Length: 209
Image (tube, rainbow, N blue to C red; front, side, top):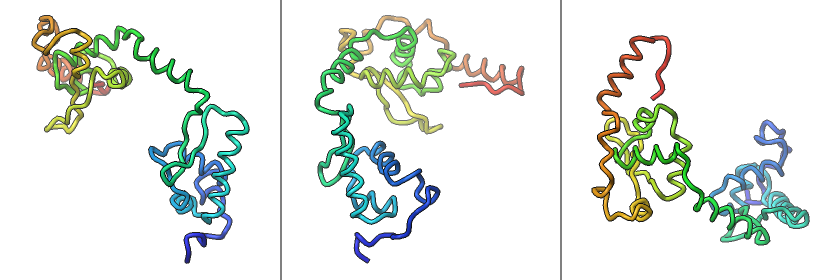
């Protein structure tokens, strides 16, 4: 059977995994982190290569005719979504504004914990701050101030540390030059005792760490 002679039966939405072929291809292309070849798309949606290619090219033409902020391009042997060239100005402004925006109080507090306790896990940062820090950590990583630094041997949890850009922004050469604030941070052994005590006092209520 040739690559163009894939399944010929009409797939129902449940079998296709999407309402129709168009939405299935759009969903796949949206999550792709590299150009997807037509034959790969055809294998996933279980439709003939010719039909899939016709649909993809039709989508690309439709987006261009409608003047969408994105387009579908054929590059490096596959297809992938890109922002439209005519929208580069607003994208550049968003990127620059994001880099220049001041950090929130939550971000500054989280960054301080990482700086003084690095390498440190997300759970321990949350324990110090008393709140979930997932979103704040993502912001700090995106700003180039924090990065993942391996994983903790015991738990396998990701460890975080500050970057050289962090030092550059503070105007210092090494972490040894940080102000002596570490003494004001809670001791982790004390925190663990407090968490364990909370579990004993409230056995029916899970403690977020």
